[in-house]
Length: 177
Image 1 (cartoon, rainbow, N blue to C red):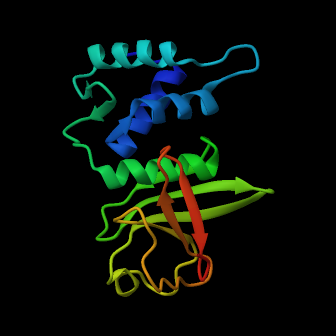
Image 2 (tube, helix red, strand yellow; image 1 turned 180 degrees about the horizontal axis):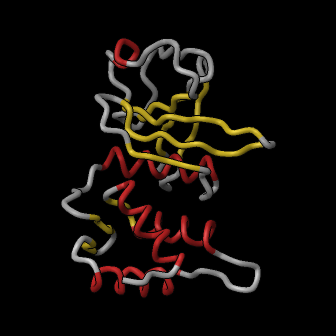
């Protein structure tokens, strides 16, 4: 099957993440595929997804979600993608899903000519034990609840993401509350 660059991009995103929200795909496409003379809109993404779904049996669509293969939705992974999109403004340099006990997603973004590596992880009581101390990336921990854990002390260059009512996140650095 011959695919356009835009279709290849969407298929690659779906293969990497397995399951994404449509609005996440819309943002990634708008930020990464738009040209000065042509802007990718939601209707373009929907048309490309329908074409891909008809040509490959691997893509499934639900009301708000798009799946690749046998992937199923994971709310923590979907939130990790939201965090990545917020921090990278929809244009990460690279990203990949992790199948780790606590790490959900790794991504890079370019800032001031430097590449910065981030990881998004679940926050549990034993998370510090599961993540090696020599990590070079910045780790962003997701909360189980809508509040910061009492007495939270994070190592240098690690952050805590607290989901707000509007769906965006508020970020807290180690020692900050």
